[in-house]
Image 1 (cartoon, rainbow, N blue to C red):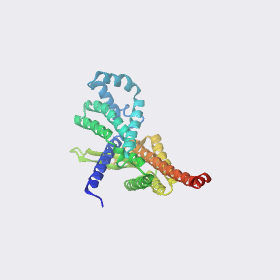
Image 2: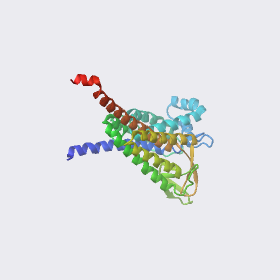
Image 3: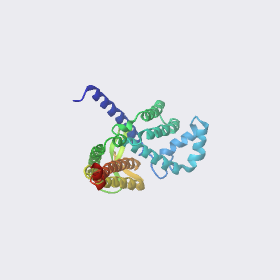
Image 4: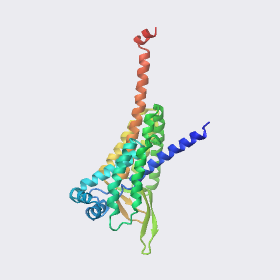
Length: 325
């Protein structure tokens, strides 16, 4: 019977892991507007507008100089670095791998983001949000958040935990893929058109437009991407019994991540009939994280199996028999 103290400890662990996942979702939901290949440079929007505003208005002269002289002349390279680095942080926070190092990186990345966004002239930003963002990541660095609902904890435990983690991760992939299939039911089976799995809610203005205040743009799917996510999830569930299938699932997730990286953009079909070009970085981070987790779990299970086989073989060897006598 579980004692009250054990229940409290378990609840604390779920809370720590849940906060880490929440931080990962925050990074994930802010990838869609970092759109390759010019990242807003052509029209003065997107990532470019915040960097340009920081170059003009940021309070620290060395920071303004770095943006003006180093970043803006090489802006597309900077855009790709930003997209990929934020996708990596999102993926690893979501799965809880190397969580302390990743949290420290997230805190460091939040500092220039805050300086650039806060001084965008037409933005209405709450300064404390960026201080809290930095503080959140420092807190995740201070505690082993990956030990709770994360890969770090699974790898530190008994090999049997990896099998259970495979099943749980596979179920998550199947559920997400099924939800993606539902939201994409009216989208072309293949192609760049995609439906949103998340929220884009807002309210109508007097002029008939929509002010969107609840943007949680997590993932984008067409039916093909959704079905492939379900298929890889099923393979991962099966991998809990036959670990080689987990490697196949990992390869499948990795292939999906690479495919959308090269595709670069989705045509998001909004509920008001408009089409918005968004980055594929959200899906790249999600599938990439699942690929890493699947491969690590499979290696753990197969490694434990090989150790058991070696131990069994050694126990039946002539040398072992002689020593036993």
